Image (tube, each protein chain N blue to C red):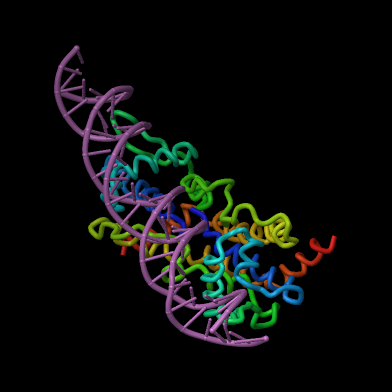
Length: 144
Length: 144
DNA sequence: TTTCGTTGTAATTTCAACAGTCACAACAAG
DNA sequence: CTTGTTGTGACTGTTGAAATTACAACGAAA
């Protein structure tokens, strides 16, 4: 089970907006062409990023833009914006373990904090990487 | 998108085997009752754990057992055993980004090492937690 | 105010993976 | 040879991702 491609597409989109903001009008069509996905997918994604106050989208005339400084947007912000995971839990737990069994009755108390630890390790790392960092790499690669 | 419940069920199963190994014959039926899932699900899971040399399963007479010391089984071992993720990649990438676009052409080079960093952070944490650690918590909770 | 390109969103479809279930041959041991 | 169990194929239901179609709402410029 993998984390959906919405996350990588979202980062792609942010990089593309930043890269082309002075040369192109940033429409869903344009972004869709860069990522090679359907424009509607991009529009929905932009809505999610907009709700998270990461981008602005102009209706009618069209065009998307990044709303805040790239150093203030972490990968975790993007991840949380586009991955609508239930309760924010990375791990799916089996429902209704047997309450009559000592293991089944306690399995949540046994495992929950461990799962949290693991998820936190991942989220901490994501919090430490900003779009500015990623953009710096992008600039180096695109120039050359 | 969440990581499938096979992982939490697998840990549940290992805890249950260890807890009841002296008092019950550990059949798929028995484990299924504790986790409250179908016995066939347990059997298939045990096959995956067996391939990873984490458990042994006796055919015919029946019964599952843990093959190695609990301190030598990490959560990462269990995770890798039961999560058949393609290439072991946690993040799903959108296929075929546009090669004619400077961003599309470079997006993998831009992001891959960041995604690896994040995945490594998670896996490192999983590697540091053993079934023995989890079992210690289980014993405390079950006794009381 | 009409036109035009775009966004926002609903509806539908396709597809893959998870998970549940049934069925039964293969097997081990008494 | 009987019994209980495993190993596995086959089928089903369900869920979510992603693609696609369609169109009303909208903004700006002609």
